[in-house]
Amino acid sequence: MNRPGPTASSGSDTVGSDPAAPPSPNANPDHGPGANPSACANADHGSGANPGGCANADHGSDLNSSAHRGPSTNSASDPAPAPAAGAPNAGAAPSPQQTQLSCGPLLNERGQLAQAGWATQLVREYNRQQVGAAKWRIKEWDYYLIYDGEVAVALTLSDMGYIGLISPSLLDFSAPRYTTKSQLAVMPMGKFQMPPSSAAGTSAYQSETSNFRFEVLEGGERRIEVRFDNFENGQPLELQLRLTRPPADSMVIATPWAEDPSAFYYNQKIIGLWAEGQVRVGDFCHQFSPLGSGGAALSGPAFGLLDWGRGVWTRDNTWRWSAAQGLQNGQVFGFNLGYGFGDTSAASENMLFVNGRATKLGRVNFGVPEAPGQEGAKRLASRYRLMEPWHFTDDEGRLDLRFTPLLDRSDWMDYRLVLTDQHQVFGHFNGWVVPDGADGAPGERFPVTDLLGFAEVVHNVY
Image 1 (cartoon, rainbow, N blue to C red):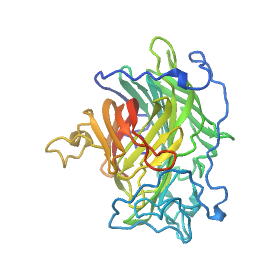
Image 2: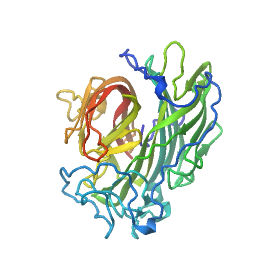
Image 3: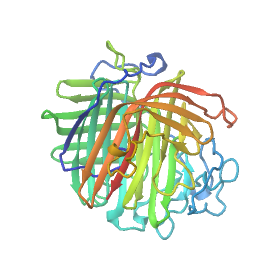
Image 4: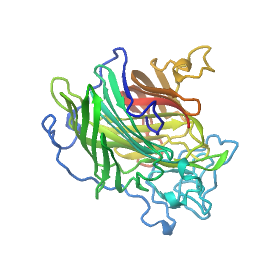
């Protein structure tokens, strides 16, 4: 799951499988840098570049990259907070739908969102002590997804105020099947001490049965160490990874809720980190490498993404999120798409990334197949035909992707006062996109072929 949600019980174990589907794509390993370590050997630790953000927020300057701002489409009936007075924005004047964030504090003196909009770095500074809502409503999470053509690992460490979630998932695309294990912590309310920025610090949790550690080193390298006992068949999951070569740009969005001035959502998605390391459960061991794991069936290069979020939410939310990353046309390509979460009239979170440079998109439709006559069904699995092909399009003619599902990593729990219905569907994308050219205007069509990624629909009430 990309954003935290409660699970059925502490220590719950979820194992799922789906019918066979088309094989995973084999990317060309010659495109990736670095040496391929021997299978299941400890990876050497290197360094990566630090993407940075505002060098000095007091200057009031906008240090975002040259990502395309995107034209205005439509605005919601409830306008988002206006940009700060005198705040500069790249390109043309900001539209109601595509406001670019300026530098400064995330929250105003009332503890509410000071500006809504998008950026390519964390230009707004989050401070937990400035939040104007009760501590039990504050939600902070780090979510990592690392995968190649064969195996994926999803890691969630979240402090949701009244409850904390520590959860690893292991997905085998060749089966296809997955295992998810979760542990709950009662009333953490800041005890996890999660960093105020994704660019530095350590997020960690340790108990008698689990150990999660996400560390950001100087230079931007990320090291991940996880141990989770009794993960599958009585065996622990053990993971050591390093993520390097952070891209120049990322997706950053600050989103309010029109119905609750104290609610906000500050989110960063970093797409296309180079991944190297290993995961082991009993006799199973898989090596992630920028060159692929090798062997009889080349897995393709491994990449990682980070979903970093801090905020205060309203009680009932449904959203869609999709992301993918990999080698396409000899270049590192990825995207982040999403909507449905808060009042996004100031900006969408839709971006393309080519070799770490962002192209800002407008609105995107996921084209999720609907089940006839099930519009009012309570469960998402009844309302949608999630394992049938999806069709992604945008409102500017810059994205047309067909998504063929492979595996549905799902979770369902209904305790009346607390509900979570989550479907993270993995599969392959085919079609085309139109990134910006060197001049910042729309460039040529960029074909997308058998790109492995996911698309999810989530409904949470808590």
